[in-house]
Image (tube, rainbow, N blue to C red; front, side, top):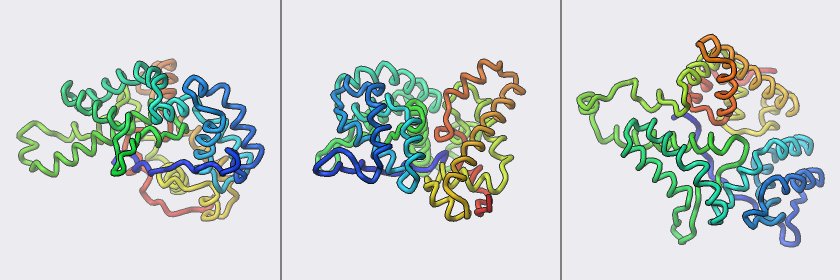
Amino acid sequence: MLLPSMQMFSEPEPPADSHRNPILGSGVDRAIARRYGESGAGLYGVTPERFHQIVAGVVLRYAADSGESERVELVASLRIEELVLARACAAGNDAAWNVFIPRFRAALHAIACRLTRNETAGRELADELNAELYGIPNSEGRRISKLDYYMGRGSLEGWLRTVLTRRHIDRCRVHSADVSLDEQIDHGASFAESPQMTSPTSDDRVSVAIAQTLAELSHEERFLLAAYYLDQRTLADIGRQTGVHESTVSRKLDRLTGMLRKRVRRRLQSAGVHPRRCDELLREIDVRDIDVDVTANLKQERTAGTF
């Protein structure tokens, strides 16, 4: 599996007498309100109250145990326009879909074709994801859209890429369970065509550089990245286990992710990638969206250390 399974998340209902959540704090409420204008929410009929509910759900999901300043920083870091677009699409807003389709559908089709290496199979894979994005009725007849699970912490395109890759891997596993190894070899299957080796990025050197960089990490660095990005534990929880304040954990994560990007950039340049292209490639990816075998790289020797 390339990345950890996406955990199901339901947004909290607002208090009966107000859309403000007293748990967040007034500073976070103000930070959320400031981002409403830039979100484009009004274009899709998303009210300030509903907007606050959406963003508050993300804050409570990822920073429930953090201080107010860190919650404010999280609000400021969210890709707010894409978060609102995704939630408006999930709610069935036609105006939102009119923005989403021309922006992402062609790219998803191209990625699916690269993953499957077959036009017909790629179209089927992309269509399956599109159906899940539009929404599939549950047992109660309520339409459930996968876009409800996008949290705005990384790019929407990167998140879609990751979801599509996981769906492709799941399909391959089902197929592999039904077809013997001999039959796969007879039909030309090879290790090179394993989904774990297939990157949806346009340059395979990115995946190679990321894998090599992750392999260099110390035990403590592996633990920190795995705990936060794979296990999705809170900063406070990691801090309690390692004996430091959550703000220290946050600073170490910032330094570590910055260091990783610099090392990946140097490797790409050493591999012959032009500096300008390096910047373009790194802008296209996010730590949470990396589509190499992150789990295998980080889950080696994950004993907690002292920072």
